[in-house]
Length: 485
Image (cartoon, rainbow, N blue to C red; front, side, top):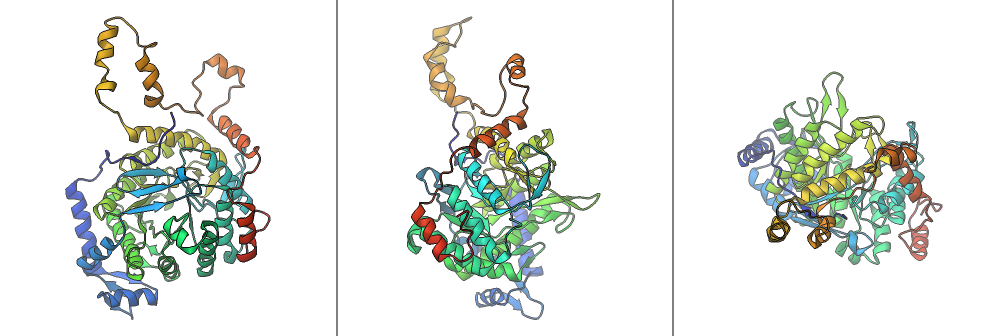
C-alpha cells in the first residue's frame, strides 16, 4: 500500500475550544502587558512604524492584540512548496499532513555500528540519496551541521549538496546573510530565474529568531528580515522548554510558544506583507533531575499537537516537531518514542512535521538506518491519519449476503479490489515464519534497515541537477565544494 502524502488529520484534539481561547487571551496579555524584547534595531524600527510601543533603551516592544491579529492575517494560510519532480509538490496548510527530516545534528552514527563521529559534508550527500528513495519522507530538511565547513561556507554547501542529490523540497537553517543571498542565487539558477523560484519555491529557510521567553534575537532577526525581503518561504521556530525557558506546565509552555512564534511571524509580515511563513513549534521539556533536553517525551508530542490547533486558530501552516528519540542507538526505545510523538502530531493535523526521521540521542545524532526505520513508522502513521472509509462498498453488505453464514471472503473480487487499498504493507517489518527468519540469519529491524541503506548507497549516483546547472553553480556561487556539487 503506497501512502499518498497530504492526507487530512485533525481527529486528535488535546485542546478544547475554551482551552484555545484561554491560551490566545493569555498570549495577547503577554504582548500588551509584558512585551517582547527585540534586540535588532531594524526590527524594533518596523514594529514602531506599525504602531507598537517601543522602548529603545530596554529594547522592549509592547503590541496591542489587534495589531498581532492584523499582522498574522497578512500571512498566507497555504504555502505551496515544490521539489524538482511534480510528485514532490506540497500544498501546506489546513489539516494536511506531511512529514520529513529535520536538523541540525552534530554527529552521525556509522552505518552498521553504534559508534558516532562528527558529521561531515559527504554524510549529507549519503543522507540525501537515502531520503530521495524513501516514499514516506515527504521533504528533506537539512539534518546535519558538517564539521568540515567554516560558517561562511556552510549555507551554500548544505543547500548545494541537498539540491544536487535529493529531488524533494529542501528546507534548511541558515547562518549568514551572505549565505542566504548565495543560496537564493543558487536556487534561482536551478529554477531558471528569480520569478520562477518565487512561483515554484524549491527551497525554504529556517531562521530561529525567537529565544524563549519573549526575545527576538539580534543576528537571527537580521536573517529573518533578509529571507522575508527576498520573498522566500520561511519559518521562525521557537523551542520553549518546560521547567527551563517556560513554565513547567504544558499550558504555560504553550503560551510562551505562541507568543514567541507569533513575534517572528509578525516580523516577516512587517518587512514584506504576504511572505509565506510557518507557525513554528519545537516545544519540549527538560529532565528535572539534571536539566537535560529531552526529545522523545510523550509531552513533546502533546505540546506539538496542541500547537497545531493554535496554528489553525490563526490560519497559519504549522512547522511542528515529532519523531525523535533520546535513545543512543536504534532499539525499542527509539521505535516507541519516535512512533508515539509522530502519531500524536499527525493525527492532530500537523502540516509540516520535521525531525520525523533519522534522529537519536536528544537530536544530536543522525542515523542512516533510522531514516529507513522512520520511513516505515511514517507509513503506518499516515495509514492511521487516513482512517477508516465507510461507504456502501466498504460495508460490503451485498457481499456478506452473497457469501452467507460460514463462508469465506478470500477469493472474492471485493477482497482483490480492496486489499491493497485497506492494508498498509510494510517493507521493513518481518512478517514471515520463524523458520524463514532463522534461515535468513535472524536479522532484526536494524539489520534490515542497514541492508536497505547499503542497497541505496550501492546504486549508481544519479544527481537531481543537470551537469550544465552544476557547472553554473560552481562558476557563480562562491565557496561551494566542487567535488560534491
